[in-house]
Length: 128
Image (tube, rainbow, N blue to C red; front, side, top):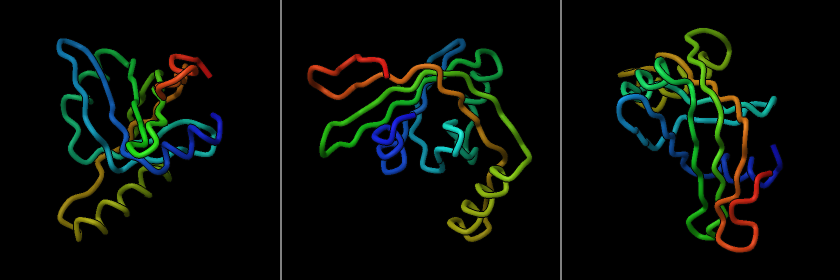
């Protein structure tokens, strides 16, 4: 994944889109780009997203810098995990932020298959 995409992903809120019987789009704050280029999202309040992923592993992530309009859409597949170092990391982050009142239940690992430019201009819709 190129450095510009990583930068926007690291600095902005992501929006996840899933679909089974109904479309679902949600903003996520507990997220990171892992070293191998996969995306990780901590599950604190996911319900419809997880139901959709159980039925259809396809997912889209949209991210945009509102000031510059630089944006990307990442399409791929998702897998839900409940153990491992990434889960421990999110549990710690969530417990710290919410002062122990809630925790991360697991992590959605997203394997990117396509990265598409959504920035207005001549590169719009270009696949990276």
